[in-house]
Image (cartoon, rainbow, N blue to C red; front, side):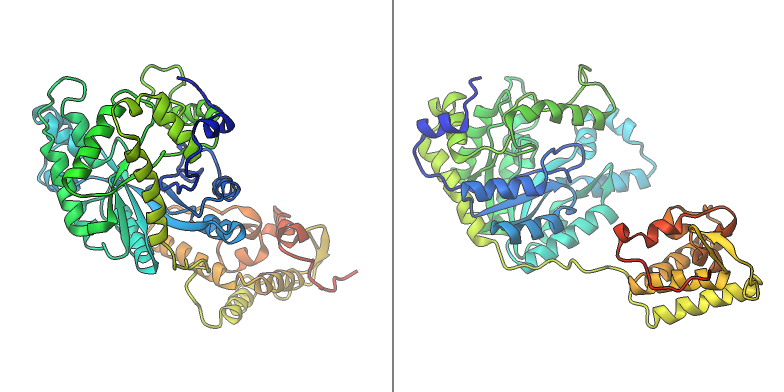
Length: 460
């Protein structure tokens, strides 16, 4: 397969340059993405692309990073997620609750067993604040209600939170593409008919209307042209628009080797293991529209697909981008609000000092390289913790520990600079007196970890 530089591709294709990537994985797609959100946004800014959709696998963790880099670069952030999709999760739950074992189901009913255990991929984008809120709700339910090996969603869950959403049919492992691929792409009948893909297109079209798009890709793998053609046929039959995505997992072509290493780590095997599952192609990088056109030409698509279909699918990515905007994520602290947290923490601390008989101890002890009494060290810690807004954090942590103790859960002494503080000992977060074993709170007091040293007069 010929490899073109960006400059060579642009010379071959002097057509429209604007494009919007709608299917992107960053480092937040655990062990399935290499580049950072910043890499992609800066890449869009350099190419003058108006927007980009970051679509991690089953998580929304990259949203804050994307939000801030979007503000810096001026590239519109489109909220998205590549969800794990399975309409058989409810059936699996019922079978398991009825005493059935998945292994037996796979043996007796292999097709059903395969569909229960496998996850298709579905690309979902948010148009606005309502759509963003609905993606959050869908994702929460996927993790809390429908988790089986992966956080899964189904059609009923998706359609019940449809407002403000755009749905793309997904990659080659999407529900529509999978049904097509099962139907004779390799010349062998599998028992699944093209009607499976038709039913999915009908369902999505009925619920999402003009906000449902057929997703076209050119990942450089066997059967991609035949699949591309059948997807175009479905789009034409049911009057569904198409979009071209590149399912990017890395920025540059040569990063494909590192991507393979990450996937091997994820699967717990070596890169030379014949059982390693990975995309045996280096095409899934951050291509320009000109490079995508070069791929279309060089990989044989142009011989069977009108170039107008390629251009239309690229232009439609701009249409999707124009539909999206107008949301603001809640990036503030998510700790429960505790009234008078500072005073409550101070009261607990001094109660602990008295209860442990340390309030009358005027001896000097070496703590954090200073000779202090218990009372003096407690004041140092309280002023630092309260000034940095961590009083609620300590109270919440104490509640979690007490709840664990009441249920008989094993708990340890904790770790980190806060865990090694005198305060943690006095309020029973950890059981050991740090005056006899630890000098770790100095890290919390360090200017490099949150500000200047407190103005506390220490005894000579």
